[in-house]
Image (cartoon, rainbow, N blue to C red):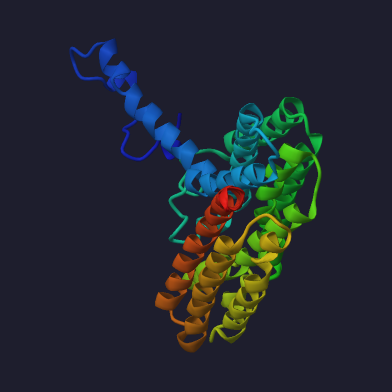
Length: 330
């Protein structure tokens, strides 16, 4: 292994350079740090925190689509297969973006731009993970539609969204499609059909992503500009267009978030919570429109990170609590 790809903090020690009296145990003692550093690099490739949010939305879709007894085995198969697909997509995304990542402070220390991993091994890893995830879903699930949706998610994220980041600011909308498909994977895995309720979940996550990613792009717009990425905030130096897009998508998100209640998936508890969360999210974007500051963009980002998990959790809870309450009502 060349010193250029040696994980940081681990010295490259030649056998001939071992201290006098050193034994094979000295070399073996170096293995744990090497292995630990390697595992850390692979984990950074698959971005576990992002994957957890993806898997949460998959599980939400599965729970909401379940009729009667929950099929725990099917849920586990769905989560395992989706996790593999997400890990493969993330790895290939970083492979394709390694040159632009090297030009940004927030990403320059990732395994590929730093040289700790080589492109060929990431190509193999990402391909194996993504392919095995799709095959696993196709074989393990009784509903083949879930594997098809996962395949569309993988392909659109890696082969459409990723290269478009260097060509057009519309990449955010394109990327919002694979980003909104995980709950549909869960829904189709449980029910085997694409229903209006699944479309409602897709629409909520799709609309949520635009202000979420525009906030990130505004915070790091100077770095995106140096890397040659075509994000809207890079071309919108005063934030007028960026703030308008944030506010517009939050305004549309308000009625869209009530879709599950209209379709009978939830009751008044969810409606009240969706309105409160939506107004709070909208308020953060309106404040950004006033100041267009990085500080306020961070508040939009924080609001978005609260909005989606809490909304889906309340949708799940209300879908269970409200029917029980109505059944017990005298």
